[in-house]
Length: 142
Image 1 (cartoon, one colour):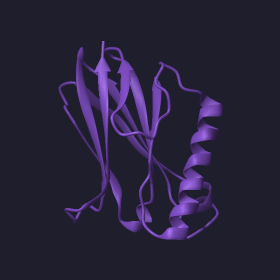
Image 2 (tube, helix red, strand yellow):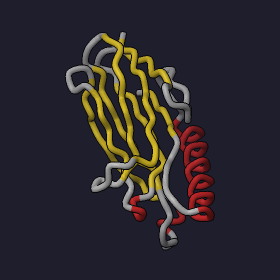
Image 3 (cartoon, rainbow, N blue to C red):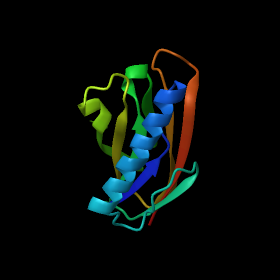
Image 4 (cartoon, rainbow, N blue to C red):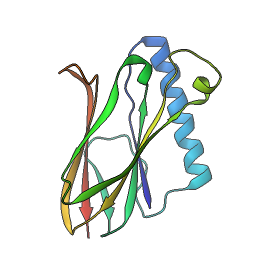
């Protein structure tokens, strides 16, 4: 199983700064404790390539702050990929009762067919058309 990390969104100057620091610390801690198997390196860049094999799973981790109403919405070809699990883990500040603190969304996918496909992640409020952020990952399934 590989892991891939992306940028997080949100709003508010000081809160956003603390949130990004929290997400960065969480990503570093996660990498040190669990490591990244499968050859997928952590990245925050759009158009990040994910190389995997058929029936292999990989994880995309994205910073999130549900207290703002924003959430990550995934778009992908269901014939090529299966979303195995989508979970949210609150950050340490949230666990300590800090109002408005964020966490991390984990999206675990399984590769189904040999192909190159894309996963588009959009950070927006479900009731609004405007998106705060968009990240596109290219998945190369061999």
